[in-house]
Length: 120
Ligand SMILES: [Zn+2]
Figure: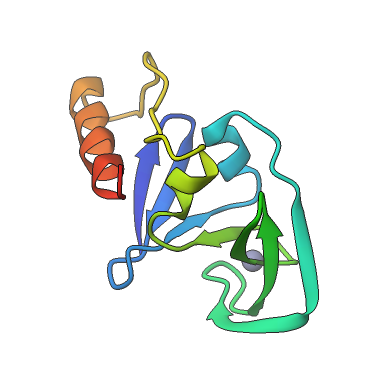
């Protein structure tokens, strides 16, 4: 995983599977809409929460199967699921947001390139 600033949130991307990790609330902040997760309490996934190292549980968000941490409410999305959650559209980072210590234009380009590679 490496931190990846995108707008208000800092995303973590798994360099092996291209999955995306969202800390609790980050996904909703990025997409700007409420995404209630429906837990499937009987299914424990093989993935461990990168923050808590506990096994994540299967959950359903907007009809997609995702992995959910019941401790920190983090969500793990597979490659492409972020775009699916955004109605099939590429996720655009709102303009005018800055990340400290990096030139804004550079950060924005990085984010755009990266999000475009997610299947947009
Ligand atoms: Zn967690």
